[in-house]
Image (cartoon, rainbow, N blue to C red; front, side, top):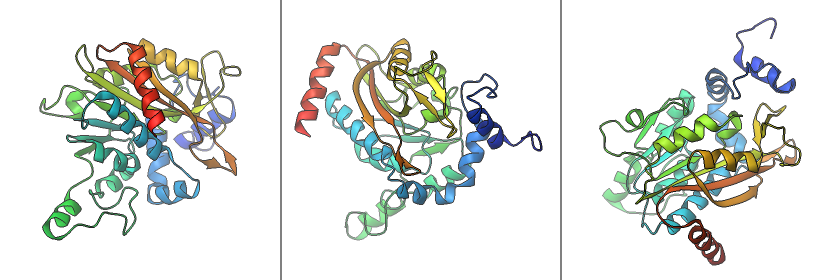
Length: 296
């Protein structure tokens, strides 16, 4: 780092190795670090994560399906894939949507890969995985992009006008962030902005689903999060739910998960699903979630 003080990856990893003492007090990885990191291994991203047993996109998709059943809607009308990467989560979200699927990521190379995905190709699909259809219908599906739009924006400051120009929607039914909060320590600004981007109100519910790496409440720092030697942040359950509540969200589903393996060890994580808006009491949500889990 002394030889190249402009090396954003080295600077971030130095902060990780020194317990966050050199992170500049930002409480998150810099945009430059995230962009550089994922630009560097965009071409091998899916392959490497597959070898590590990575399953967060599928878990997020399954949680989104559960929330859809809870909502009493046939489909979501809009969704934001926050930190979409190469589109692995988008593959699970698209079947649940009848409206725009918007992807945001800081890495332009990851966005380029996601832009190549169609309804039947790429973004986690291998050759032969797509359902068999005939003639012009299959041709149309193979040309239809998986995402309606993809853009490079900061998730803490992105606005609905930037994400969906033209006032076509006033917010998202569903926002997901698969393995994104691992690059944020302090998540208050992020969740507040997610709340701004949601379309939940007195008459309508909006859902937020995301994963984090986990630090147990008993050993978590007073802040509720820590920068690990891996360069990723971990959060306690109580910290996450507390910040989400301040942003106007109610917890409806929680699960401890193993997002992937690392150096032969299970990474400790957790998956959250929140709701905002609507008039149903929290007890009703808990009853619906219990019913869904019994059916699965």
